[in-house]
Length: 276
Ligand SMILES: C[S@@+](CC[C@H](N)C(=O)[O-])C[C@H]1O[C@@H](n2cnc3c(N)ncnc32)[C@H](O)[C@@H]1O
Image (cartoon, rainbow, N blue to C red; front, side, top):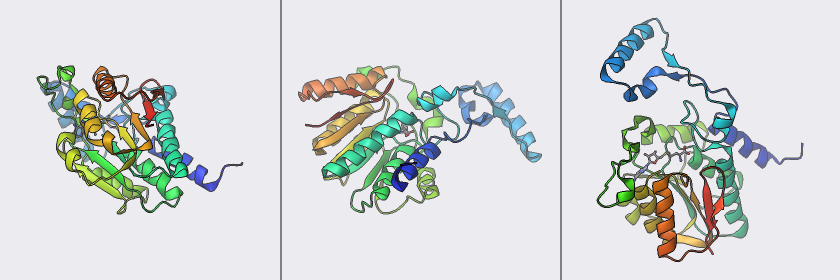
């Protein structure tokens, strides 16, 4: 074995965050019950309640393959991140590169869900003994916004906001950081819609910005407010390039600002560029 303790820790952290050490367990039936009709929802609630009295639980078997999980193609029941191994590795590499090259600035993720990618970011800083850079954790902590089609036509018909599964409270995300022993003053929460929080966020400079807000509006709000603060040599990571709205926001922004830095593919949806 010729991996350093640091590499071993970060590998284990990524496996734990993505629940890769264990098989995907069935999810509690209530987790996705908002997708069912009112009658089925009620029946499920009554059945769950009755079973709970005998300390049983109604669960749903979702049958995902190992590959789908590793590639971050599912909404996982237990994992603290849904971004899959290649995108975790990409975030890890980008942070190690800015540390090695001395690129100044903090790290931000816009769209954190259960917080896993931000927890990894904090873990990488900890593993390298960095006590100065902050990890900004930006989210509504109540899911995605309703589309504003007149302002952003690319979002018309977007249904992300109906998915309660994507709404994870700030308390839950903080508890997830705590689980890994990584909640401290270097972790800064920015609670609210990006259009409200990002313009006044207490950020001077960024070294890594990771955008994972799925929609056109969420992506363009993050680019407009944060990209000017990204240091040269810093990384702009896009999680949702496979989604039309997000892709259009990235294309629009890059065209408008004449950004010609190579857009590099991470996996089936992840992409990034390094600011020249
Ligand atoms: C796909 S999830 C993020 C996954 C996460 N990065 C991970 O590691 O698993 C999208 C997140 O973006 C947040 N979000 C999307 N658009 C937003 C906006 N405009 N303002 C605030 N939060 C937003 C949602 O609340 C949700 O937590």
